[in-house]
Length: 344
Picture (cartoon, rainbow, N blue to C red):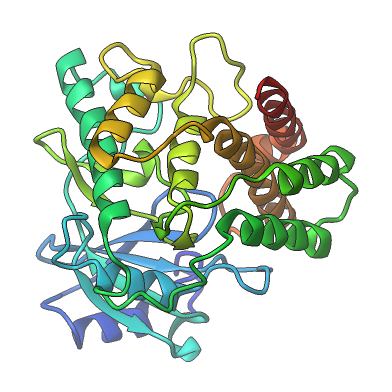
């Protein structure tokens, strides 16, 4: 890799790989997308201003089962032609000699990523409502996909999703963290004892929320992104996760500072629940448990990210402010999980 290459990209090798598989011409530029705290995402632009998107793992220490590029590539490929909007797939590279890690390339989808209140101000209340309605509707569409029919029937075990997730993230923290987290351990025990019976199974995105979707110019979801946590199992966990991110006007900022969905026009969390229930026909009486579970799981994920950031795993990104806020945020998430469990 030359000294002028962006973190994680050997420009010469990746350009050659791309030109063998696409219509790319001329000089190819790679822009690291700053939004996102896990896999690295680049917008790739050639001399004709044609664009693609490249995804690869972080450049440093990673946990054993995380950042599986082949898994993301397989899921997006399987959903081509379904009612779930995903980018077109260009190809997957498993040859680490090209740029130091596996990567895949997909088509560029034009639109908007709405990650905070400021981003939401570009839209009218009517447009925001349409965005949130589409967000809920696409989640229902994803959960209606039969994984066996799209070739994802062996993506993971279909049963005991929450139990598997509880074991997975407990193990990740136990093996990867450099500190003790007593409340995390206590909540794990409570969540394990109180988990509801799983009713049915389907494709679970694992991190479904507004800023992990591209919103098209028609104010509908034009592409669902960031599939690295996708598996099979209890689809209500996706709804619980989306609601965790949704925010309430009286909430603290443990999950997100000023979530965009608090802006006027977006569905309220109660309206989200009603719309999902009506479209899916699912019983949502245990939904508070899934929200508490998602607070706990996000704390586990952020703890892993904190360790990677500390090890300098995310390339040349400016991470000073995030490092200082990690422990407070993780503590806030665990407290939110505890409070939600106590309210059940």
